[in-house]
Length: 375
Image 1 (tube, rainbow, N blue to C red):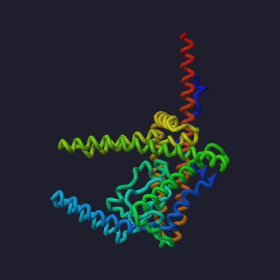
Image 2 (cartoon, one colour):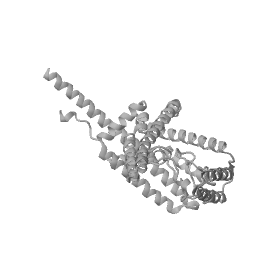
Image 3 (cartoon, one colour):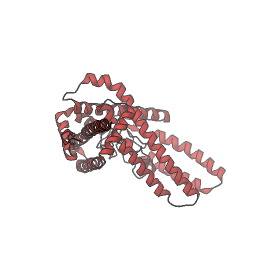
């Protein structure tokens, strides 16, 4: 193979991250998405689910008592008492915490008031019942608008409180907010992809592509969800069989399942990037992502770990000033860092995919040339 025809080597990981920040500095409109989301969480309305919790407590009390009496066992009664005490504590009020309404993640069970979506006490079972990390609004999986205030204590007194008293209203509200958040995240990614591809941003192109991109994003999220659920179900089933046979190792099996799930998702990491940058359909984009990660696995792992470390360190710095007007500079700083890291992900995929495609094309041409020489 002629060395002069070899493709240009890809840019290093540090260079990619610096290019991400340069892109954000050149296109400051990208900062508005994480900044406005945090401001909305900070000063926006609150949702009060206390009436819904009262309803759940009343209905749950009667149902659990009936089941426990039919079973004739004291343990369900004890469990019911603990559950009712916890619901009563939630109904009495807990520390309000911000949770993302305009980001992809959501909790299964709501607590009491915090900005936009209810708060959750972190040491209760409800707090552990969150959506999987794949849907987290962070730069780690780059699937959602990053937010500094998510999960933090709420500091403001709301001017508007939306009181939700029925499960149907709560379901409609949460579903609507998730869909709005998904649409906002896709617009955010589409703008970043435009900025990576071109020096100008086109609102007309954004609006024209939005319906198709939203559908592709929903399909990609669905594929991720199905893969993670099926993978974990298989390992949960194995752990259940081991427990029924009085064999140990159930926790180890679950740990292995979590590692397998993370490994699969790692290779699908750039599926959304491929759809937006290369105008690929769902499964071809996932295939491109798998090839890029396969060919550049050490660099990809280093890149993701650096993104995670940078985001974690700067988040702790911004949260040193988590009250009053000192919080505003932290929100601005977080928007710069998070938008730059998300943009770096798009730049990384474009550069590594370019290198893989050029090398693959050159390799195929070389194999065809050698085949012709043998013939």
